[in-house]
Image (cartoon, rainbow, N blue to C red):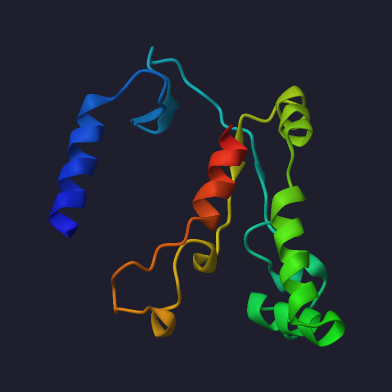
Length: 143
């Protein structure tokens, strides 16, 4: 599997399709060789909640934050909260405003639990553990 992925990455890197950015020496350039300066905004807190962003000094891991929410409103309402949080954190109006403000990139901190099951929850170890949630969120953001 690893060899296949490395081969794919190598062939993609050699192809350099139009519209993609690439490294040239110490610079980032577009398909015409023009230098591009990336001005980015991070969407920390969306797909990965970090305690320091919420002002939590202790118990600031994502699972401890979720546990605190469950304690306050229960499991069902916590699940609904996170569903709405993920759906509404960033919108088309937000990305349009970022572009209008001069940002050229968005950084996505991502938590594995939106993309795959924890290993202890896999029905068959290392098989069919992918979740669509994270991929759908990224596709919606790109759209």
